[in-house]
Image 1 (tube, rainbow, N blue to C red):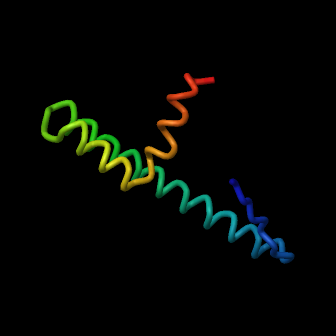
Image 2 (cartoon, helix red, strand yellow):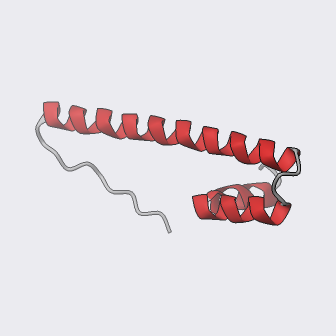
Length: 76
């Protein structure tokens, strides 16, 4: 179940600063995720890790919860 929390700040300047901080966090997290995905992909492609090990790493990162349901839907 998704719970979205609204940003409850009435001061527009503070609200904007919080929004910008949230965007910076999302950007840095996405860069980290891209880097980790690249490393795992290269290791898997070059047989330096097994498919089971790749699944374990993806599960640790929470990626399986995001990726597998999407793949099971067939890209709808």
